[in-house]
Image (cartoon, rainbow, N blue to C red):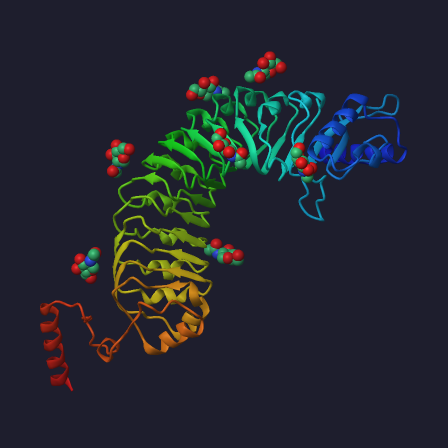
Length: 456
Ligand SMILES: *[C@@H]1O[C@H](CO)[C@@H](O)[C@H](O)[C@H]1NC(C)=O
Ligand SMILES: *[C@@H]1O[C@H](CO)[C@@H](O)[C@H](O)[C@H]1NC(C)=O
Ligand SMILES: *[C@@H]1O[C@H](CO)[C@@H](O)[C@H](O)[C@H]1NC(C)=O
Ligand SMILES: *[C@@H]1O[C@H](CO)[C@@H](O)[C@H](O)[C@H]1NC(C)=O
Ligand SMILES: *[C@@H]1O[C@H](CO)[C@@H](O)[C@H](O)[C@H]1NC(C)=O
Ligand SMILES: *[C@@H]1O[C@H](CO)[C@@H](O)[C@H](O)[C@H]1NC(C)=O
Ligand SMILES: *[C@@H]1O[C@H](CO)[C@@H](O)[C@H](O)[C@H]1NC(C)=O
């Protein structure tokens, strides 16, 4: 096992030597093709005069050469372009900057780089429409294909993606790319990350997506994907992150997903999933850190599944149609929770005092429910969570004067909060009375007052 790193180290060393000796290395076809790509990405810069020499001895940051066969003393290996990274990211990562008119020189340009392992574009194709087609001539050497923030990149993935058999990372995010995921996708057996978020993809997920046993990240969020999730999604055993948020998926979240034991992030929010109730099997995903299911129609009560999910730091269950009480177990077990969103449901009963135990909590949204009684939090808790404590829209909920003051200090939303009266503060308070109460409530109130007078 130690041989592999050693080999890398030796080849790295030799690359360095070769570069310092500036041996004649990069072939003219690749050298010329790099200039042509650079010119069409940014014609404001005189690439040829800035980098006149062999690009393997002196190249812009982001253009990377490498030995494609391990050189021996008698027969040096050949050197080729193995990485092309375009688009200024940061001073730490100052790739050749693209300008607003960036395009590609010709549709087959990438066939000039037969040993390319990584191709990366950040913020390059922003105004002129550039088709994804030329990238289909990339071959089986490619391991990473990354497009980040290229809003005028359009087209669709074609069957040729299936030819990129070495692909480990496919990132297409923030583009105008559309169409379906082609069947050939299921053949990319080395794929570890597929991030296709924030594009215009549509269609259903292919069943044989489940072939991708090495997949750790599947992020298809913010597209127009639809249909049911194939049950085979449970075969992606190595998934750590599954984000399908903001699509048009429907039907039930398949129970097979409980097999995703390594999952840390599950985001299915804002789709049309309709399981009856929040799935209980989530409790088997013991590594979960983020559980975001907001904006689906589940109904039912919030299940008591938290004991096994102690590592969770974010829960989004906004607008999922749940009713009943907030389980106090959330406060008991989830000590690492920083975000809890339960707003826009039909939750009733009191706010559990146990939530105050959540010492990491910095956002708690309970607004627009049917919660009642007195908000049980201390001034300290209210000051800490500050304006990210949202409780408005619960007409039967009241807040102590002191807490209201803390709220006011941190600029929290005060408009619709009701101050608790003395009765609600007393331990005999069983019923809350609001101005809109029914006559029946007023009767109960009178009886209560009567009882209190008797006791005192
Ligand atoms: C982009 O192209 C247009 C028209 O071809 C030209 O007027 C403009 O100056 C170019 N902008 C840059 C930054 O090169
Ligand atoms: C994206 O594609 C649509 C339809 O093809 C087009 O109307 C729109 O202008 C494109 N957006 C950009 C930023 O190129
Ligand atoms: C895949 O590669 C093979 C061999 O290079 C080629 O014949 C075929 O057309 C490619 N498939 C697609 C869909 O591009
Ligand atoms: C995946 O399934 C589709 C049909 O849904 C098929 O066209 C495609 O060839 C399959 N791909 C692989 C790699 O098996
Ligand atoms: C969810 O919706 C599908 C139709 O998309 C329906 O067949 C199924 O019965 C629904 N499930 C529940 C639990 O309502
Ligand atoms: C809570 O977070 C801390 C710090 O990130 C971590 O060490 C600990 O394992 C977490 N607790 C659980 C139960 O995962
Ligand atoms: C609010 O909760 C009360 C019980 O506390 C219940 O009687 C009432 O129907 C609920 N209202 C709504 C709109 O869910």
